[in-house]
Structures are given as C-alpha cells and as structure tokens.
Image (tube, rainbow, N blue to C red; front, side, top):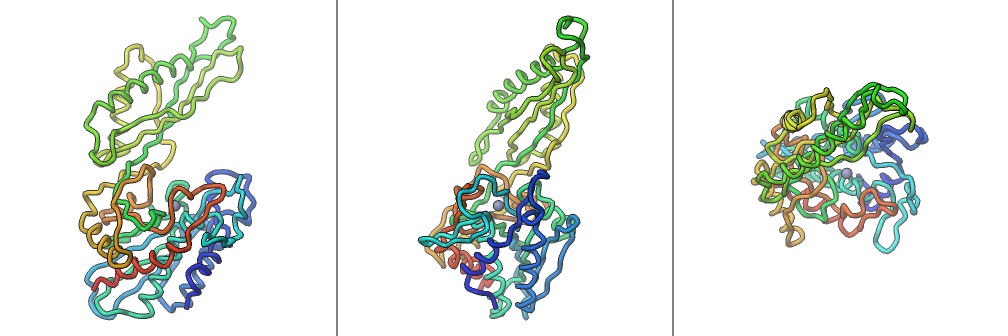
Amino acid sequence: MLPPLSQLLAEMVRIPSVNPMGRTDLPGEIIFESRIAAYLEERLRGLGCEFHRQNVRPGRDNLIASYEPPAAAPFAVLFEAHIDTVPVDGMIVEPFGAKIDNGKLYGRGACDVKAGGAAMLAAFARLVKEKPPGSAKLTLAFTVDEENGGLGISELMKSGMRADYAIVAEPTLLNIVNAHKGVARWSLETTGRACHSSRPDEGINAAYRMARLLLGIQSYLEELGSRAPDAVLGPRTISVGRVMGGVSPNTVPDFCRADVDRRLLPGETFESATADLQAFLKALPGVDFPFTLTQSSPGCSPLNPALSVELVKRFGAAIDSAIGSHTVHPVPFGTDASRVASAGVPAIVFGPGDIAQAHTKDEWIDLAQLEPAAEILYRFVRAK
Ligand SMILES: [Zn+2]
C-alpha cells in the first residue's frame, strides 16, 4: 500500500537526487539517483508487482515495473518519469524539506518531476490492486539523467522498450503537450598560429577566423527564418551562446571556440542540421580556412505531433472525464518524449504542476493537482 499522494511526494522530495550535470563540486550525499531508486524499489516491492533495475551508469539505475492484466490487453502503455533533479544552488526554500504551506509543497524536484512520478506510481499501484477488467498493459519506468542528456531514457529505448502509447511526466498543469522543437548543439572551432601581438602579421588569428563564421551564423539565422516555419512550433533558429579563445592580450590566439545552439523542427535531424550548417559556412566568402563543427551535447530530437494524434484523442478523453477540459499545446523546451517517439512509440507529455516553477529557487507544486493527475492516468490505462 502506498501512503496518501502528498505524503508519498514529500518522502520523494526529502530524498536528494541531484544531477550534478558535469559539476564536481557537489556533496556526494545529494548527487545521483541511487537513494531515490532504492526508495521507489521498496515501494514497488510493497505492491507485489514485477519490477527490475536497468543499469545505466555505475550507481545509476533505471527502475522498471510492469503490470500485465488478467485478460488480453487492448493496448500497451508506458509511463515514464525521470528521478533526477537539477542542482539546488541559490534556493531560498529548504531544497529537501518538503515543507507544505497553503496547499503547496516546496522543494527541489517537487514540480519537476517527482509530483508527476508520484502520480504515475499511484495510478500504477491502483491498477495492480484493482485489476480492472479490460485494462491496458502498463510499464512504469523511473529513469535517470533527464536533466543532463537523457542517458536513462536512451538506455530504456535502446533495450527494446516498446508500447502503443507513452506518457512522459513533466509539469503541464494537467494539459497535453504534443510537440516541441529539437535541440542540436555544436562546438565550432577555428585554429591559427600564435605569435607576439606586437607582430600580428607573423601569426594567424583564430579569433578573426571565428569572427567570419559568427557573422555567417548571424546571416544563417535569417536564412533559416526565410524557410517555411512549422504551423505550431514556428521557425528554425540558431544562436551562438559562448565564445572562447586566446591566452593573453599580447598573444595572437591560435585557437577559438564557439558554442552553437540550433532548434530543430519535425523532419530535421542532428545529422541533417549539421550537414546544412557545414555547407552554409563553407560557402561563405572569405572562409578559405579549416574549421570543425562537432556535437557538444546529446541534444534532443523534435517531438512531432503527427505521431500522437490517436493518443492525444484517447488521453484527452481521460482528462475530460476526470476534470472536464484540457488544452493541447506545444512547449519551447525539450523532453524525454522525443526520445520515446524516435523509437516509434507515440508519446505525449503530461503531469501535475506548472513548468514555470521547475528549476526555480522556490520550486513548489500545487498539491491540488496530484490526485486529479493520478486519476487521469488511471482512467487512461483502464481504457474501458
Ligand atoms: Zn523534468
């Protein structure tokens, strides 16, 4: 048996599962997902259901539970929730306090996305307990590392996880998110020849070379904007976020690097976007020097709404039957749903809470959204 949802969520928030996101200065006792995975494993054991761990990295396991209905299942569903959170620097509430005040529960992960995970676990537990006739087969996956590249969901899909429909937990205020852009990130690098700055003619300035490329990227943004936008998601975009190079004011730099971020529309892939940008930069006037464009983060693919039309209809009906109405809309940020959809499983994003409170210094969730979230998830899988 599970405790009431708000208590379940409070217990989850009190267990730190910070994704260090590459940092090495965070205390060992708050980082990674081993403690929350152990907690959830105990909960699953208590339900008497099938479950197993899937090792992703040392000490970092996905947790996968499944429910098989007594009679033939009309369809198979995947519920997925990540169990990592972003770091807690600068927070003005106790990050692992799970303090409840005025109907809100405060703490890191309360909104993103332990509330969604708790609601999924509650719906799963109810299904296991009630075994309603005609229900779907359900897999519940708690995954690691969503906040820094999605190792957990990638491993899950790589291992052959398939379903007819997938619900990915992120705060959507109990609405349906069916589309987002993808993200491609590159490190763009130029080289040159270093020399003393008093004799710049003896060197080759990698920063000047980079400057040509950066101005080229600025005009590439215009070029992308002239291509047909997606009716829902808008235009393709590109942005340079950081430029680094050189060692001192009196040395001609032999190295320069820029971090480039490109937002992809359905139909585009990392590979196609890379090839397109490469070709554009190479064709620029004055670019007669070598440069490299290499992937700097896993990014994510676009979530194409065309893949989830049937799912949106079914899940929307479950929402309406529970709370009366819902919206279906795109979001500007990437989610695990696109990785699920890339494996051919129609996926949408759904959960309690507002993305506006995710990653904030006073992260909180409106507790009134928890029970309805669990009820909607349950109704969808019951699928009478
Ligand atoms: Zn999240």
